[in-house]
Length: 347
Image (cartoon, helix red, strand yellow):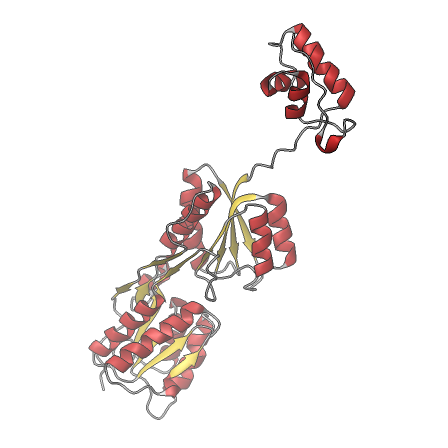
């Protein structure tokens, strides 16, 4: 039988409960043996068991808390849950979550782009495997709280320029805006209006910059009256197009910065008795399912939302495994999808 050693707990005290390692050293046995004793395993010699139990009886045993394992959840955060945009994102995350036997939790921020205090407290309590925030972003303090609990998070289509420490997935918005405008220019349009998204949105600014770059390269002067700021809503397309069509020299084409706005443009054209594309060409952005069912089918820039979401989910899982990302910022390509809503100008 091993002799016990006169070993004191850290700090020279012997009246505090001891860890398994301290008990093993005091009893002169292995930590595995102590673990078997404290967990009631039978494969320990009676004399050794009595020795270990005597040390525990004298000094106490302090069980170290194991860090809580993350829940088998991916938390998906939207600023709103309306329209087809969230559905495309959900499909992408669901694909990756299902492949890794993870469930999905949806959070909605009531049209706010920054989560509130109650949200982050809920996430810390749920302790998901990771968080994916869509068209929104966490504050610096919230990011620190999530990192402190080893909860990785990735932004999809961030509203602002993400910090270097915040991984994100976006689309080629600048190149998409460029290709949309070039398509209209190649058809012969020169009076090309654009209805942008909100100025605080990175994607909206990038699409506008792509439009400006295409117009500049073609040597077409920018008319400030043809640049309108919206909020990615159909009502923006309707209201702004009504005003655009009332100009002394109205546009022959409208580039709407998302498909929803493009549907508003369709409505305004219908009200004015204009035919698309004979009297007015229209191009959108996103290529959500309704685009192909519009009359006529909408020419648009395809933003790979499902692939963006799947990429973000895979990045979260990489971080959850303690691995480094190859790139902190991923940008997926956009594609121009030409349908029936664009044609050469009739005037």
